Image: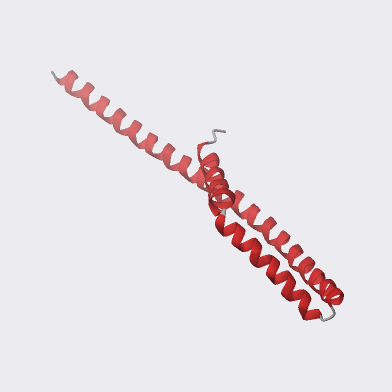
Length: 115
């Protein structure tokens, strides 16, 4: 009877060790996936900021050039602002298609990707 009790205790200890190890493995897996997602998002954010700076400078140049063509420099800024307003309205109307879906697919793809 003593050997059965000792065997059950050993089995319980091994089950406990297995459960702890499995929990640690899942915890590290979540940390790895989170780090992967956040590092990819950070890289995209940096690239996006650089592209935005390019577009800002290009927009100022385009506004000055358009203002020169229209006769007064501030007319060019109004024209470019109107173009951005139209672009913003289009993005608002199609936000699910152009923003929500790609971001969701990116996050889901990073989460489910197996290395």
